[in-house]
Length: 447
Image (cartoon, rainbow, N blue to C red; front, side, top):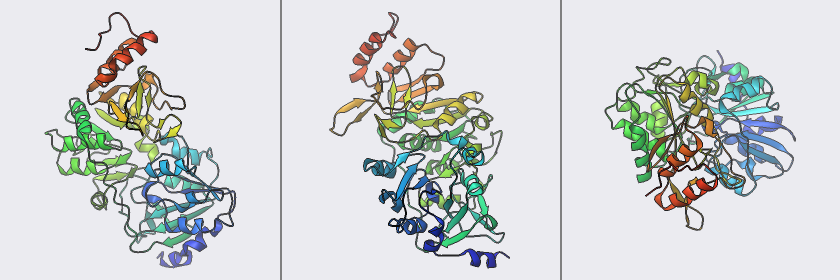
């Protein structure tokens, strides 16, 4: 029924991107939805275009060609990745901070600038005329609804990810169809293998996970370590509800630990808004009703998260100061990551009945010169970003322990944070706390 319409709209990538003109704003779909063929074709127009703004999020390989053509294109990332950081170091990428759960409303309420084109990678069309968005629901349908031109890049290696809601776009909403080469697979990104510090942090968190808990994992080795620990535990009827679906969820589900039976909503399914991981994970997700793809204004809305009891939110940070402010996105003025859904899940977990939010970090790191530095600091260096204000902080976890700061005064927060800092830095942190007048005579002096 839709085959003739498909043929009419099928064009080359070069033909599709002709709709883009100098000064336009273009959205690439996020994550695995980032186009490849259309990106190359658009970048090839660099000599005839100027000041075209391109937006994406969590830029994954391959490196977008438009980002390399400075002057012709201005590339933006709503949530930084390793690729984004490298591009930033050459002045080729800018960060765009948002509250992630609000992303669809930014388009539908016309807060974001109008997009002349949206380009997204999709699954092959089904018999009903729908292109499944694969593992990148996010805000895609909202921006498709509001854009002047919609270009889809069909990739047969995209897993069909069941909803949920808003997981597909109909051909009637599409202006141009481009087909990717048959050998263009999604990048295989299984994640970082947990190290000993990650495992120690995971063990501290595991003390607070109980039967029926609902788990959200962020990106990185520490959340991954929690997933592996859960998979090898004897916990029962855990649920999953997350922004990012990762390989650890496959481990938890296949181990029988995560059944979703105790969830108040989306029972027996893990709700998520995007997924990045290994080919094994994508194969698992393909047409699998155990996973439910949702737009981000559902998965990340703190009010939705709060409907799930015993919610456990686990995210990473870069630094915490002794006032308990959390920096999860920069080192000084250098953007490392972004807020993403951290704010959403930190708040939603605390609104959940018996919910808990865990912000994790190693106690130290080595700088570019090999010097060991503490991640728990007196104050952030100039240009650093406060991602989570101290009023929202629940648990902070390092390899030295997990401390709950919620409701505590400044002096007690300082004492608890110093207790989980690396011992080599505790004395100088105490001195800073005394200088800031947040250290009382009742505080314990670290041994």
